Amino acid sequence: MIDIHSHILYGLDDGAKDLAGSIEMARQAVAEGITSVIATPHHRHPSYTNTKTDILLGVNQLQAELQRQSIPLNVYAGQEIRIFGEMVDVLIHNDELLTLHNSEYVLVEFPSSSIPKYTEQLFYDLLVKGFTPIIAHPERNAEIAENTDKLYRLIKNGALSQVTAASVAGMFGKKTQKLSLDLLEHQQAHFVASDAHNITNRACVWKQAMDKLDKKLGSDMVTLVNMQAQDVVQGRSMRKLAPERITQRKKLFGLV
Image (cartoon, rainbow, N blue to C red; front, side, top):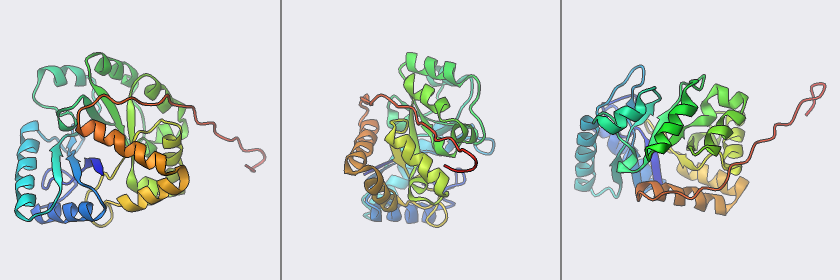
């Protein structure tokens, strides 16, 4: 199993606070059945900016310590990049940004309440230049929760998205859980990732998420999301299925 979104690197953002915290998270990930993690510290976040150099150094240091302690987890470098208008130019001309494990895939975070108006054009420009945006946790975006057609349009035009394991497991509430499963069922989400920050309130709940996914959408869906995560780590272009719109049932006199 491969986790493409984790805040396992210590001392960089709101994830692991120290090396001991990173090691605890690594042990938990292995216990959950994960063999590889892409470390994705926040970048261009209102509170955090982590350079490519610092992240690569952190990955190398953590990997060395995991090997020293015989913890069987591969850690790769990436970023969770808060969307910004100049992203394409910076990716091409600057050493500031990291794709996921040096692949074509870029993990992009929206503000929690909205989708910036320039997103569609930015994603088009990314795709033209050979980068594929993966939208981080769309199920936790208020504008998408209100109108899933806004995500559908982005996915139809070539973007991908990743829901959070804790969302699938129900830890962000029933509505967020249902939306996560709906997005996966309708091919508007393509990955499940931990977005783990620690081993307590933002833990890696991989087994719970996979069990729920298996129960609700079947083992083929479990296989699919994990194969697509392998595509990211191995740098393969993903052959995704066409997305479908989510039909939302209307309430009539307060009844559904």
